[in-house]
Structure formats: C-alpha cells, structure tokens
Length: 452
Image (cartoon, rainbow, N blue to C red):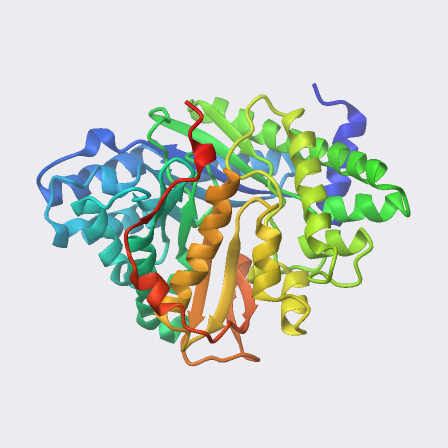
C-alpha cells in the first residue's frame, strides 16, 4: 500500500527533481512467426507486434494521466531476429528490420529493439547476415535498435566478430554521416547481455522469457542528487544509507506503474530496472550525484570509488522495493545523455580511459561516446575488446555504444537531440592495435567461469 506521505513525496520528486518512468517496454516473442518465406515471415512479425502491443501507448498514457507520473518512452522488444530468421536467405534478413520499423510507426512507440544476434562463441549464417546488414538497416529505419553480444564469462570473447564490429560501426557512421552518424547511437555491443533489459539500444526479448511481458525502466538521478545534498557532510555509511532509502522510493514508483500496466494490458509483469538513467536536462545527471558526494569534477581521482558506492547502494535499495528487479539496474554513465558528463568531457576532466575504469563498477559500459571520425576500425575494435574484457573477467554486463563522428575531430561535438543529447568528440590513443586485432579466434573464458 502507498500512504499519503509517500504520495506527496513522489509528487514533489516528479515536480522538482525530474523523477520519471523512463520506459515501459513490452517484450514480445516471435517464435511463432518463423517461416521459410521471407515475405510471410515479415508479415507475421508485423502482425504479431502490432496486435500484441496495440494498446501499449494508450494504456501508458492513461496511467501517466491518472497517477501524474511522467512516462517518457513506450517501447517494444522482440526475440533476437537472428533466432527467427534462419529459414530465409541472407539478403532478405534486412526486410525484418523494415517490418519492425513499420510496426513501430503503426504503434506510435519510440523505439523497437531486438534486431540482434548472440555470437559470443560462434557466428551462425543468419547471425552473420544480420550483422552485415546493420549499416543499411540502421540507416534506413528510424526506430529500430540493434545489439550484438560478442562475449560472456562462460564463452570468452569472439575476437573474429570484435574485429568485424569495428568495421561495421565505421560503416554505420558513414551511412548516416549526414545525420551526425546517428546509426551508431542505435547499435550496442555487449558482454554478458541481460535478456530482460527495457532500455535501448540493447533491449531484446530473451530466449528464456515468456510469450510477452512488461518491463519498466525507472530513472531518478535528480532525486538521488538532492538527497545527497540534503544529507550534507555525513560519513560514507550514512551516505550509502541515504542512497538506499532514496532508491527504494524511486523503485516503488516503478513497481506501481509496472503492476498497473501489467494488469490493464493483461500481460505478465517482468521486472523493474531500477537504473539511474540521466538526461541532458539540468538536474537529471549522474555526474552531479558524484560531485555532490564531494568530487570537484567527475572524472577526477575518486570518481570510480564514488560510482561504486552509488551503484551498490542503488541496487540494495531497489531490491527491497520490488519482487522482481532485473535488466541492467544501477547507474548509467552515457556521456551524451548526461549534462554533467558532457561538461566534464568537454573540459577534459573526463577521458576515455577514466570512463573505462568507471565501467568496472557501473551498470553498463562505454555508452554514447563520440570519437574522431577518422578513428580506424582496428581502434574501435580494440576499445570494444577492452570493455568486453572487463565484463568477462568480472562476470558482469558491459557494453559499448561508440560513435565515430564522420567529419568531426576533438573539440567538435555531435548533436542527436532529445534523450540522446550532445556528445563532445573525445580523443583516442593513436597507437595502432591492428596486429593484435588481426590475430582472430576467441579469447578463452577465464578460469573462474568453471563453476559447474
């Protein structure tokens, strides 16, 4: 039950501290759409998505009005396309992306995820075809998001595909150069990808999920930043307790919206992802949370420790508020989507190397980072390999969403608008990893993966 004090406090957090539901995402299984006829497959996928999620947007909008809780995005995720398109020819796989985009437009949702492949150990024919289609698919479609899982703690790292993904990301950037290389902003590569993530660009409906499900992503960096500021010069134990209590309150709101959406749509409730997902708006920044802890500027020494404390406390508080917490859950650090991170990167306080260190203790990885447009495919692949290694070695999810901004160099910026924000172009190390990347094969799984 929710008492009057909780309701008034939630209203204040919404009004003054940018608290919102970042996304209500419906996961939809496409297994019953499988066909050896490409046109039939695409028609079945379009019909399944539009029929199943027909009431998603109206229902979310009704909940938003009734409870006064902002719901920023309505999204759909589907079974990874590489798992359902194996019966059609390689050159027709891209037609599935087009069908997904049409379905998204029909529904009026913001994004649709699941144009995805799982290739951590090997690359089947259809998965390779999907990956090769990514530059064209992401250039042609407006709402389709793609992901590729290249590594896991159990399997190691598929370095053949790490090498190819560096090339694919460059091609995505080039194909959308007239739009600030936005194709790359809709593509993420993972290690240890979660199967119930409601956030884009990495959302898909995992192989262990049911027929359909409602997952909700919560956001409240401004609420946490205000709570820390109000706590003043307390010790770390008190600081952690303050964050835990605040995360509990934020997640309670997510649980409410998830339960209501599930009930009204007649779709099972999946998980609440209790992540602190920032926006470019002032007062909605993870960077400012860390600075409120006592750092002069995010990116300085002490940033990784502060982020570790934040991430752990958010998880501990959130799991007490919902019976099912999942997805990524913790603190996101996307550079272009966080006004504090944008400022720190633009002034040189935040480097790619510091961001990599921070990803060892946060929820995702190197996210929404712009680098010079002439960055080589080998350097992009090496950045991916470094980040995935952190995930594999630490048995955690890590990811890379990087944008080689064609025609831009350090000191420039790219602007995507909306939640994707603005990214200052950050420098990369110029030293070539080409011989290392060219070795190919698979980096073996770490010894601690043998837990059977």
